[in-house]
Length: 217
Image (tube, rainbow, N blue to C red; front, top):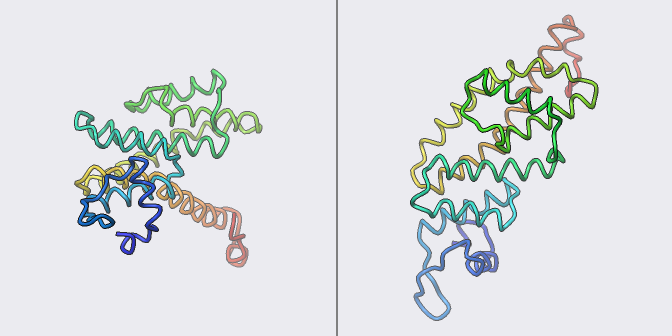
C-alpha cells in the first residue's frame, strides 16, 4: 500500500496508531494485509491533510462523521466543507467578528436567492468577513456585485455536485468535496483572472495594446 500510495510506511503506521486508518489484517507477526478500503481511506486522509490543510483532530472529526451510519450524506459533506472553510479562514485571517452591516448583507443575499443556508454557516461568516474587509479598504461598493457573483456561483456549485454524485463510497464523496472546494476554487480564481485580462483588453485596449495587456491584470 505504501508503494501504491506513495505514503511512507512509518506515516501509515502513525495513522493506524492515531485511529485515523483501520489496522490491516495480520498475516504474520510483522505483516498485515490492506484492501481497497484502506487505500481509499488513506487517500482521503492525505487529501484532507495536503489539499484541505486540516489538522489531524479535524481529520478525525470528518472521519467519525463518515463512519457514522446514522449521518446523512448531506451532513457528512457539510462537516467536511465546514472544516475546509474554517481552515482557509484561519490561514487567510478572515476569521473573527464581522460588523452587523456585513452580516445583514449576507442574510439579505441568502433570503433573496432562496439559498437553504444558515446565517451562522462558516461560509456565510466568511463572506461577511470579506464584505467587512472591502468596507475597511474603502471599496464597500463592491458588495453591489454580490448577486453577479452569486449568479456565477450557482451553476458552478451544481456542476461540482454532479461530479460528486458520480462517487459511490462515502470516502470518495468527501474526497471529491475536499478537492473540489480547494482546487476547484483555485481553478475558478484562475479562470476569473484570465477573463479579467480579456475584458481589460477589450475595454481599454485596441489591437496592439490588447496584445500587450499585462499577464497578471
